Amino acid sequence: MTERYSGTVISGFGGFYQVRRSMEQVVECKPRGRLKKTHDKIYPGDEVEISLLEDGRGMIESIGPRRTALRRPNIVNFDRILIVLAWTLPDYDLLLLDRMLVLARQGGVQPIICFNKMDLLPPEQEPEFRAIQECYQQAGYQLLAVSAQQPESIRALRQELRGGLSVLAGPSGVGKSSLINALLGREQVEIGAVSDRLRRGKHTTRYATIMPLGKTEEEGFIADTPGFFILDFPDEFQPEALPLHYPEFALYPGCRFDGCLHRREPDCMVKQAVEEEKIDRQRYERYLRLLEELQTREVKYR
Figure: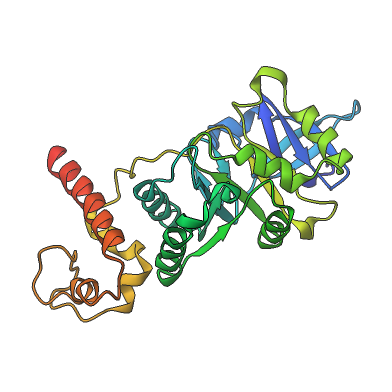
């Protein structure tokens, strides 16, 4: 029986996949034809078993179960999502942030919020940022302030990303690439060489690539993903599920009705908490906008 070796898919293009066997070895592989019967696609993050050929390349023999998954860009088995917004250029969008937080939680992953370009924050806007930070921290989220121009903030971010695979997500222009470059560090020549080899010219921005954040697995890995993950709520996502993805709502149980949507229902503890300023009113109002979107979609497709 051919000996098999375990590895992780770190990139793929044109039917060929790069599989990391260790921090020092990446093997270019093709999948066995029989895998098409069980898997439509192979994605970065897939845990696979491979056999080695005489020319040093390999064959993907099997694909393990997927713990987590993102659509567009397709990546699996990641441990955290770093949702990146810029303080300015482009201006941040909190409704977009709330939507992304819900989608991340719906996918079973605890997200981290990252405000980038904080070197552009003028002193007179600091209270505005502190209010946003307090809002999301009270909701149970970690919110980091970073800048690729501030090495101490990058060092702190690297510590948060230790262990496992982190995915960066956010709109264009927020500086995801600059953050990745700062996290990788120009001094890590070996990492850069592997990265350059896997980025195949014009396809660099089209396919996700997993790169190490250091020379050991304990330092973690980061996915350089092209563009944005899909922002539409899945068809199976019902309006009744939305409140479950607002952690702060769970702090105020006891609504009169089971399955309370916290909108027009009487004796709603969440609405009472909003009136008492225990829950941020603007975040609650953004929740209502997302709820209306889901309810409108439900009526449309009945």
